[in-house]
Image (cartoon, rainbow, N blue to C red; front, side, top):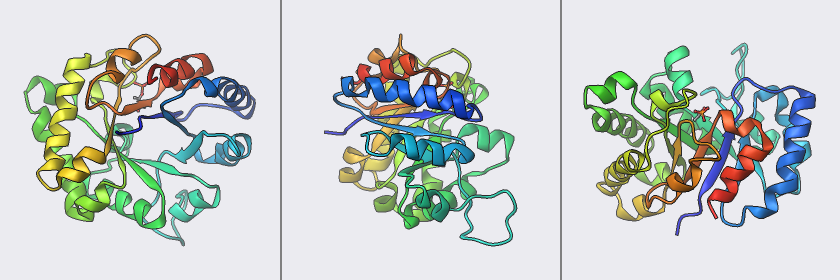
Amino acid sequence: MRKPLIAGNWKMNGSRSDNKALLAGIKAGIAKAKVAEVAVCAPYIYIPQVAEQLAGTPIAWGGQNLSTEAKGAFTGEISAAMLLDFKCKYVIVGHSERRTLYGEDDALVAKKFAVAEQAGLIPILCIGETLEEREKGITEQVVARQIKAAIDEVGIATLGKGVIAYEPVWAIGTGKTASPQQAQDVHAFIRGQLAAHDKAVAEKVRIQYGGSMNAGNAKELLAMQDIDGGLIGGASLKAEDFLAICTAAG
Ligand code: PEP
């Protein structure tokens, strides 16, 4: 039985006072989330604040990106060790905004996965097709390529130590959600790709859905057999909405 993971991706949002109120709100209601594991991935600069406010709660935290380098002359970068220094459990790698706006390709994302996992973080590997790719009918080809890049780099056993987030790019921040069946079909395909390498890993690995998941649609999406939680952008910025998603998992 896979424990669903609901992870908030704050992206480049927040302020010290907004975060304080948001985290207090999440903490106040988290006991109602009986089934899901819950995490928030904050901008680097706010991770110490998140760590301080969430210490001693069941809520984990993480980063949204990391460097492939361990230390040194890499201005503006953050290492895995730095994230661990502030007790991050998770780190997102290969979010579509990193891929499209910052030119991260499959090979770099796979390397980030490897570096994060080796350091002791749990990488959340984001994959998903653009609208153009879906309309061309190549969704499966795209996600298969993205998964293969990670397996080629780290092997199936190590991939299984991370989390996969299927995020159709056309659904991220657009208000357009994949229907539960559309999402389930791709999740099942992804699990099948993993099973071709190792059935036990495929059974165990959590595959989150991401893309305009909200308080209104979470229950139906999370009810699908191969959807093991959500990576939540916009709706993770309001405690009430985020908690509604966390509790929709049961
Ligand atoms: C995301 O940033 O990963 C995401 C899914 O965003 P949103 O929920 O806003 O679509």
